[in-house]
Amino acid sequence: MLAEADNQSEHEEHLRLRPKTPRRGPAACLRPLLVLFLVIAQNEAWLITVIGGNRDKIIPRTTHKEKNPDGSKTYDFIVITDMDNESKVESEKWTWRAITRKGKLTFAADRKSAKVEWIKGSDQNITTGLNYKGRAMELSDLSEYDGHLLSPDDKTGLLYEIKNDKAIPWVFLNSGPGNTTKGMKVEWLTIKDNLLYAGGHGAEYRNEKGDVVSEDPMWIKTINRRGEVKSIDWRDVFSRMRTAAGYPAPGYLTHEAVQWSEKLQKWFFIPRKASLTPFVDSEDETKGTNLMIKADPDLQKFRVIRIGGKKVEHPDRGFSAFDFIPGFGDRYIAAIKSKEVDGSEPESYITVFNARGEVIMEDQKLDGNYKFEGIYFV
Image 1: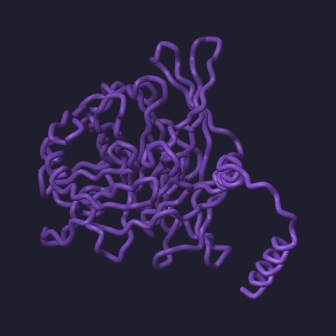
Image 2: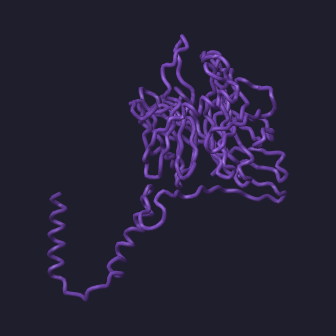
Image 3: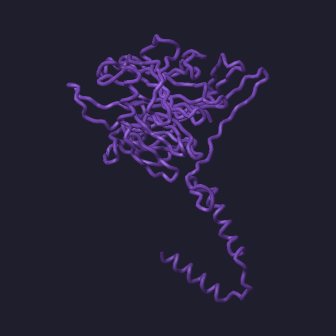
């Protein structure tokens, strides 16, 4: 503060000694402020545009594609891990990590085949020291919002910006209706009406007797570009949806893969698990499903589709994330499946199908025993 005062005194003395100059017009006076504003705008990641325009309008998403001589198109994408307890970096006392991996998806001109190529050496650690009871960096999805690549930690409730090898905290989301001290277990992100939506499994917690002990996972959040959070009660939404799909309470659906389609004006839900009976941990491991549920904007009507036919070929695999392949009107989907079975290493798979549930690329295993829970075209 003393240094600032001295500088101010010197500045005032300098002004007294300066020769008088003609007064400048309003435009000339504003020019330095405009230059300063532009400099700040280039360097401040979350600057809100307050001069003209819509303060709530977000920067549009950008993706990269290459057109190939055979008419196919190749798209860049990224995936990210939720490694649960394995997120802890054992060689460092207070460090947790997630891994990002880059890939390329080539989609045939006739839209009947697709192939995935992983970029060798692209695995990158994203680290943090922020944790909740020794757990952290269990990142469960990816979404670009207002020009920033975001990912939620389902243990701490922190919503991070992923920038190079850094996880930069942006917003804290607490569980349930917003009056709790525990972080929200966020499993999916999507964007609708310039708002970022964040949601969890969408199923209540029950005790061993089958009594409901918490409905917090049935609340979702919306976040605007200023980081303002609202808690929204989706208990009726999730209840109506599971009943429409044929899994009424005490059965359940668990959601980790949800997207809003602006082009089709529909919600897409691809549940990870589906059960006709109450939750039992050991049984839940093989409750993977092939359901795809589409809903109108008001979430009153639901249409249920089976991906790949009626039979669930691999009930130990469940959908953990998906993204629409760019440029096809949200009618083609690339999705990640996760496998977590007690006594074996976790596995992840990638698959491609269309919005009618027809499989275009069968499950392909990702290298390494990592659980990937986010996919996003960049």
